[in-house]
Length: 150
Length: 150
Length: 150
Image (cartoon, rainbow over all chains, first blue to last red; front, side, top):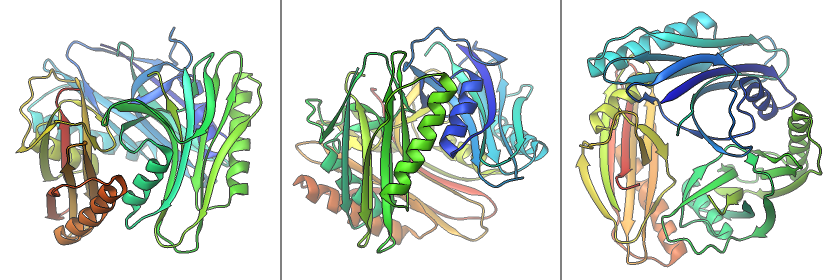
C-alpha cells in the first residue's frame, strides 16, 4: 500500500469552510473521504508528501486516517497530528488533536503509540507529522494519511 | 451519479430512536449508512425527493452525506440542513446543524458554501434543504443526500 | 451474513491507547474499522464470541457496528453495549454508551430498540451485550458487531 501523509491549516468563515481550506492545502478537498481507524498493512510505503497529487476524479472515494481540529476561539493554540510506526509485522497510526501545543501533541502521540506497540510486542521507530496554529478567528489544522490504492 | 435528497424529523423516547424515526421518514432506516464527506461527481443529478424509494435489500450499505441533529431540551429550536452547488467541474455539499433557527442554518450554509466555491474558483447557484423543529421531549432532524449508484 | 459480537475493556495511558487495548481484547485491533449504522441483513447469524479470530490480513478493512466509551475520571462507572433483534424481515442493532451503570445502559437499549421495532411493525426477542467498568485512571469499554462477510 502507498500511503501519503498530507496536511494543511487555514482560517475560514465557518468551521466547515476552514476544514475545507485545510483539505485544499492537503490536496484532498475534491474527494469523498471515508475514515479508517489506524492500521498500516505490511510492506506499505508511508511518505510525507505535504500535498497530494492524485489523478482520481472529483467525487471519488478516498480512504484516509485523519487528525483534524477546528476552533473558533481567537488566540487559542491548536494542534493536530498523526504518529506512525512500521514494523516487519505491520504498522500503526495514532491521531492526536485538540487545543494544545505542538509539544503536548507530540507527547500524547509518543505515549499512546508506545503503549499500542507494547500491547502487540512490536518494535519500530516512531515518526510524526504535527500541524499547529494560533487561531485568528476561526481555524482548522489537519493531517491525513491517504491510502492511495484502496 | 443519481443523488436523492431525503429528510425527516421526529420525536422519540431516546436520541437514537428519534434519529431512527427521522431516517424512517426519509426512507433510509433499513440500510447500513456509510458517511461520505461532501463532494458531488461531475454530471450528477441531484433531486429533492423527500423520501427515498430504494429497491436495495434490508441491511445493504448506502453511502450518504448527512446533516443530523438530536436534542433533548424541551422547547429548543433545532435545525439540520444540506446546501449544495453543481458546476461544470463538479459539485459540493455542505452540512449545517445545531440548536438554532432555520434562518441561522441557512446563513451558515450560504457563508460556508460561498467560501468553498471561492476557494476552487467555481461558480453556481446554491440550493438548500433545511428541516427545523421545536423539541417537545426528545427529537431529531435529519437531511441526507443518498448516493444511489455507489 | 455472519456477525460476531466481540468486546473488551481496558485501562490505558491515553484515551486512544485504552481504546486500542479494548479492541485487542476483542481481537479486532489490527484491522481498519469502517463504521456501519445498525441494520442486520435477513438470514444473518449473530453470535456472541467475545474475541474475534479472523484470518484477515493486518490492515484489512472490517465493517463494524460499535459502541465504545472512553473516560478519564477516576471512579466513574462507564458502560457500552449493543442490543439487537432479529425478525423474519431483518434485524436491528442499537448502541448505548456513556458514564452510567449497566442497568441504565440496559434500560436505554430496551426502550430505544422497542421503539425502533414498533416503528417497523417488527417483533422479536431483544438480546444484549453490555460491558461496564469502574475507571481507575483512563479507561475504555467497547462492544462491537463484526460483519464478517463484507
